[in-house]
Length: 444
Ligand SMILES: Cc1ncc(COP(=O)(O)O)c(C=O)c1O
Image (cartoon, rainbow, N blue to C red):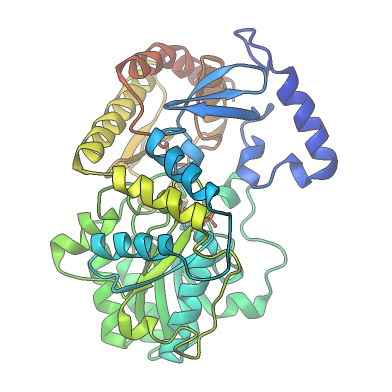
């Protein structure tokens, strides 16, 4: 594959990638960034403003990764930068309580009904890891149910059948996770409530929690079937288990109140614990887990479940997160919904015109385009995709200045900074990219 058929320069990215590979495994600090499944050189990004990012060679791209979710307002939003600069001026970290933690926690609790108490951490992985430990501590049970294709960060116990990053590299699992760890984890097909009922019937009183992405988005976007999350809550509660909905990706992105606002709040059920990340840090490292006050009361220093973090609730990170959430009013979500709808439909139309099998799936403002024509309701179906066709599509879009997530198993992330000119840029780029996908399909 040529580096860039448009002739844009990529030497500096290539040089940095070569240097990085000598001293950093794979040249990256998080695997999907490496372009492993699409080939070629990842662009090293130097700056971002609004909907665009600029690489070290000076090429500008319309960004549809948005740091995998956090940059919902676009890059370098003035209100966020200002809040961060003010916080920086006051010092970087104290390891004592600080006001920003209280303000961010209050904002989360005010928006999300089931979250009576919340604790801040520094990543989504820490949030899910801590929520699972807390659920086990509360229930005095060991087993956890998770769904194939759902990713909850790189927590040992949750790395079984873990979706995008792992799927991209075609690893069914991770080496280094012991059998003893996964022995307590039951992996079931997503959207299959009967399988959940069977698991509870087989292990009555043994399951501490079911953890599920509130809408699966790490195998591409696979929304929960109508009533699936509600039924999960019911099945868990009937057995005395907890339901953990992981909103690290969906929280404050798919609506003002996350995915819960689109289902639980409407249908009258609630998870016991929820996890957050990405948007609540506005681009800096913040995660959170929260939920029922009686469950959260078990956390150290009140209770026996230990959990801590040197940089938890860091003042710069909480300032960025709070400033981001404060910008996210109903008007922004309306815009995000419209933008996501337009881009998804443009992509689907172009692929349709080129004769490429595809399927557009959404959950609120989240969407992805599967390179397969059947409805995708679980991980096995997601894996029927033509990944070579996606790779060709991806590179044609990159050549045209549009940076998509470099994997067929990822959601496309839109920011509120995308405007009509950007939509036109995408519309102009799509036909050639769809044709490239069609050619890859016929040759592959
Ligand atoms: C649903 C979900 N949970 C947890 C995580 C892990 O978050 P982090 O990468 O911040 O550790 C992710 C990351 O993509 C995620 O999408």
